[in-house]
Length: 236
Image 1 (cartoon, one colour):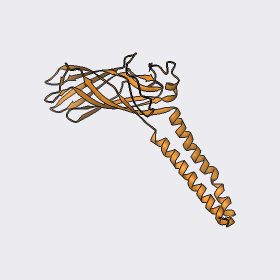
Image 2: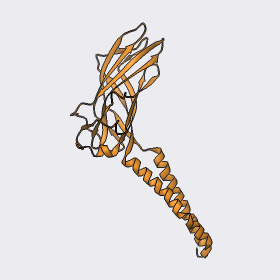
Image 3: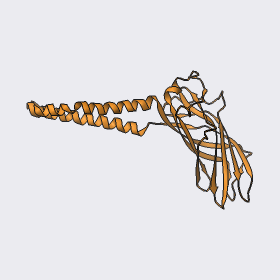
Image 4: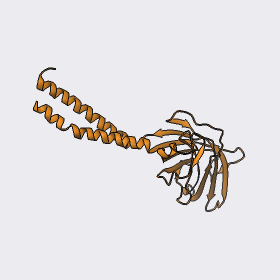
C-alpha cells in the first residue's frame, strides 16, 4: 500500500505538466498559426528579363512563410467573403518570401516597417497578399542587382480557395518584378506576371512537443500506478 500512495503523490505534478502542454497547444491553435506557401511566377509572354550572361526569366519559383493571429482573422467582419486584413503585421504576424533565381541564387525578402503588407483573407484563411519588398543581392561577374517584388491580389478575385483547412490554393496575384543592375549593365528591367500561391498549414512544433511529452508522462505514470496497485493488493 505505501508504494501506491507514493505514486499518487506525484500525480498532481504529472497532471500539471500535461495540462500545460494542452494549454500551450490550445493557445497556438487559437491565436497564432504558421502557413507556408509556394508557387511559380509566370511572366507575360512578351516580357523577358535578360540576366547578365544568363538565361532569360519567363518564370521564377518562390517559397514563403507567414504567421498571423488566427483569432483575429476568424473574427474579421467581412468573413467568409474575400477581404483584406490590413493590420496582421501590427498584430504580431510576419511575412517573408524567398525567390529562386538563376545561378542558384536564392534571396529572401521581407517587408520594411514603412511598407507593411496586407493579407487577403477568405473563409477565415489567408489566400494572398499585397506587398512591396526590396533587396539588393550579389550575382556572378561582380554585379549587384536590386530586386523589387510587388504583389497585389485584386478584389474581387475569380479564384476560390479550397475547403481543405491544411492544404489549399490561394487567389490569383498580379506580380511585378523589377531588377536594377549595377556596374557595366547599369539598367533597370521590369517583368509583369501572375501567380497562384499554394498554402500548407504548419503547426508550431514547440507546442506539439510539449503536448506529446505531457501525454506520454501521464500514460507512463498510469501504467506504473496500475502495476504497483496490483503488486500491493496481489489481485492482478
